[in-house]
Image 1 (cartoon, rainbow, N blue to C red):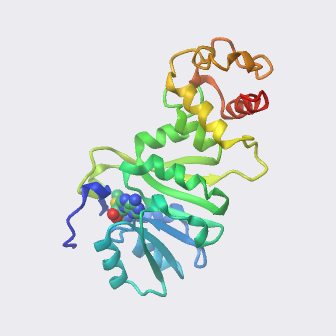
Image 2: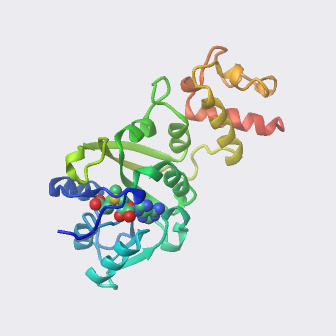
Image 3: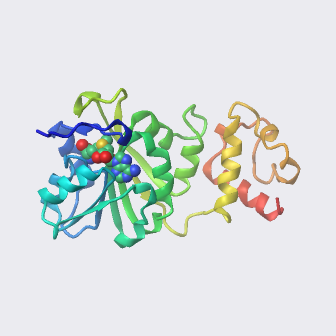
Length: 259
Ligand code: SAM
């Protein structure tokens, strides 16, 4: 196998279980001419089987040694290796209807998911391996203890589906947590969108800053400007009780009130 020493700072846990690799590739179901971008190809556990099914693949890898190794292993006409931090990459350069995949470095999963929302209009779908606990929060529905800022922000842009769990033994070195695979499909452009992304982000972050408290208390500074009844938000509602659409309407109401 490899001479590569796994680097903790890059969240390197390499997938070694062929059965899991096959299940992931089957879930992605690539067609030859799909535009696929892999984040963090590492030692090519997913890269190789994907390339068997694709004409071309683009891979973004931060680790210089791994990037060099990939360039040596694969023909440049089939695999384009971008040596970069995925958090700084402009994904629109790769085209449209992108299929983004990756066994993501868990230490940057939330910032990376948020970074990618900026390019959601260029994306057909995303399949990611992440910490299971994070995926549970991503797909959680209102009223559940897992419903959080991450759920609202991502569900306002994507339809999400948890596919299956992956145990620590499937990796080398094994991570301390159970992982899972999530499928994310951007919502259609005509779906309800906040009037101001910034206002939406601010309202949602503020609401969940004290998730056990009543929303009217948490948002006390703005409460007078919010048409609570028209928005059908109960006086006792807490952050975790409010649907994604209601958060959008709430943030729009604050924008309209000039808050
Ligand atoms: N895909 C491989 C696999 O399944 O075995 C490796 C997965 S490992 C969990 C995460 C990979 O992402 C590593 O190759 C790591 O070097 C790379 N990585 C970490 N941070 C990154 C970043 N900011 N941008 C791009 N790649 C990154």
